[in-house]
Length: 474
Image 1 (cartoon, rainbow, N blue to C red):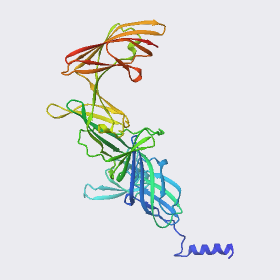
Image 2 (cartoon, rainbow, N blue to C red; image 1 turned 180 degrees about the vertical axis):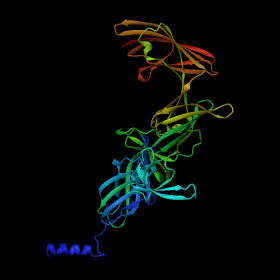
Image 3 (cartoon, rainbow, N blue to C red; image 1 turned 120 degrees about the vertical axis):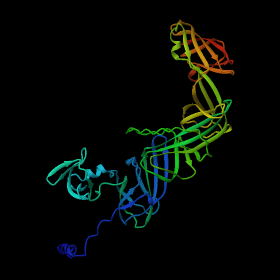
Image 4 (cartoon, helix red, strand yellow; image 1 turned 60 degrees about the vertical axis):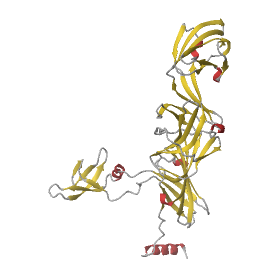
């Protein structure tokens, strides 16, 4: 058959009624109902990793797949899709469509087009239909009815349909090639902003402040624009590096109450340079929901309570001329994260809120502090506030220059205790440079940042005085 005859035959076939070229396959639309499982990993940096597994039947050879019910705050460049079995397919194109249906968007799509107006006739009290052309939506719809232009019309706007480029929900769209005409299980994975977690700890001190009970809670805040039903949940604790190309959204704060903790539900494991906490049951994380899940529970934890006075670095560079003044005495509690202390699980960063029962047995709030990621065998230290009944006064008794780079200073720290029990106050002095303690009324040690630390016993309803002289080279 010659080329001219073949072309003529093709023209005849296409012109013959009932004979037409094959139409392109309709897009495959997948919604939440197709889900066979969803895995959610949440980072404590306003980030989540979603792995959405669905069973689909794709057209043979490929076509368009519209994957609905994904997070509104998805990071489009992080998306991937793969078949979990079989020959798979090739992804030719990937799009994220988020031009969502709303009254304003619908009106914008109909600018310059004809719409219907339903209005009530004041005489017959029946609704009448008017045809109008929508001219603009800036500040409200502007309409042409017949030969007149109007705005603020009391009638209801009726649209003939929803434009194809408006969608009700955020949708991922793939153009696929090479798919088999059988049911396939595919997994779409992506990162999303708008979901985060943190740890909240409730610490209840014992009567003598030497023991405590601890309940740790995971607080998940989901503002990602999606619901994750019966998800396999994992939490990553650690500082994952991210490229900051947009302003982070602030997670809504939530106050943790003193509540009884259930048995721990998370299994912890080391993962790369972080720690991973896996919930041992499925959990549904709803859109715009804050959820709390028990992380850790421990009773009878040994507690160390400290009263601390901390000096200032500038005390040592110039003569102060005598009295420096009164200082607040901080109150701290410290626990060691050890198995023998009924703990031993790496504790993620969070807020520790401390409570104690009053004489009537009611639980009262006594302070809170932020704790950092705390590995096993490290200490957790919480500042509760400043002591009401313990007062410190400081005086510089001498300051002199000994050589071009050498100085001596002498100080007196007076501690008064108005409590009904004996206490020990730690005095932390941030002496600069290379220093040597020439004399002191109490023993000292070199602590953090090479500060001089003194432990000074102060009797009940009494006072104690710390005296020391130090030589510094700086």
